Length: 102
Image 1 (cartoon, helix red, strand yellow):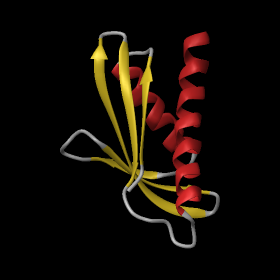
Image 2 (cartoon, rainbow, N blue to C red):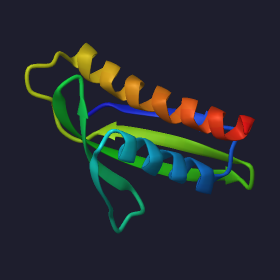
Image 3 (cartoon, rainbow, N blue to C red):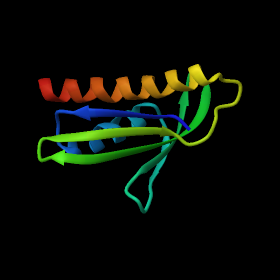
Image 4 (tube, rainbow, N blue to C red):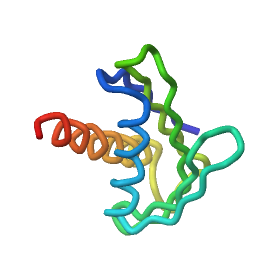
């Protein structure tokens, strides 16, 4: 399982909303599970992948985003799987930047 972690200069709530917005844009199916993580079935590069998104609050104005690939993606190398997580992370970060600018 691969995990990416990124410190963000925005509140936890904004990060969570950004995750949902991006998942909706990607037409993903998702559920919020008991632990507070968001589990999503996401299609990236024509492949289905199961990911978990978690956001922890560092302070009132900062948070940490964690994205984990929960199972291997068929016909993808480990490097490709890492690129999938980077793709998702970048989309969320860009969305947050767009919201902060407006």
